[in-house]
Length: 576
Image (cartoon, rainbow, N blue to C red; front, side):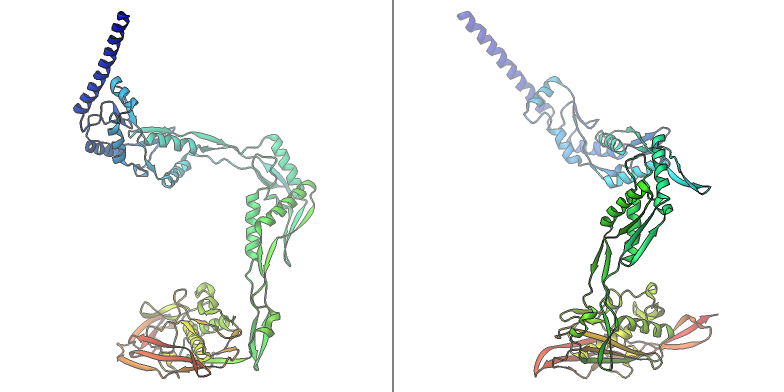
């Protein structure tokens, strides 16, 4: 019994001594390596032991900036830019510094065994930039091969086999690069290629040849409403799937792209019925049209089924395209329900001395504004109604106000129409929701008019807008006479008893015009001088706009304008 007790006591003393020794070792390590990374610690593959935190951050930052990750393929090599990889070296250093200090079993073992402990140097990778960079590498390495095709020879069609290609195995390559970034040292990564199957075996060639023979005998008609798109067998052959996959009969991408062009051709927005007023009565002159939208994906399924039938028997197939029709907001049948019974507003302006391009643009804008219908409760937008103003939409170069000066630009003269619409809307007593004055007093808009009653537009930023708050629709009717250079805008609708009043224009703060300005004009013969702008004093103007009904005010507003002084502007011909 005593012998057993003595053995137990010795065992306990030994264990205790060992624990004390470990504790002493730990304490000594803490004291010896205070403020430094413990022995055997690596950040990536960079030894950082014995270094302070600041030294570690400086060391690994320098290593990462100079480190090269090189992608290799045979004799070629490419170095990846280091800026694709961003490291949080403060966090990584803290993780390295904590090894051996966490009072965890693995840390005790690490200290006792004097082994190595590597902290993975994780980074944030700019994958879009890396993938774009790898795409450039791929251009030098990959071989796309040749897809099988159908050729015509001596009036017959034959399948010509393709050849295989090679592609970079990008998934494997990116993983190798990701692993290389964690080392913080120079690393070489080898490009792995995979085969791109393009070549057909003999059985696949025979399958395709049979399909070609059937397709060339057939035809396909796609009906889009009243329109028909007819495709001969030669066109149908172009839809064949030519990849090594005999179960796939047709190339879905090619067919869908073709249907997208069909849709682009026949799709249209609904068009409201357009009307004009003749002798005080509303007459139809352009019927409403349904909007058309070809449902490409639904039609694709039908076309695919038709192609399969043609491949089987060389027949003629007819497909009725899936189409969604959108009725117009204003149909021809609604002409008697629009509430348009009389003229409720009229505005006019003159544009004498306008150059031919300006006259053209006024007429074009008039054609797009006339017969516009605005339902009750809706806002009229001049820009939306007229659309884009550019050479592409038919506008000629004419002088416009841009950047504080008069210069040639597409659409000069459009503001003649917007100004006249503004005056008609005021006369009709409609709420003006957006209006911009011109930069200076334009002579055109003061021909038989007071200054300050103008409205400029600049597509798409500056617009003229007003609200139809009447009980019925309103119709804009334009009367343009290029010979007398006189424009009238009339607004027809329902008279609800409102009365519009416009005060006399107040003018103050007049400033004299600067010296005359001469501008070269390539459309005029050399030596000819033509005046297009007339000197105008700068001024500030305002007028009051008040709308009443049965003696009560519906709304009122003051329109203010500030015009800079402007000079005479002359066109000086430069055309030889």
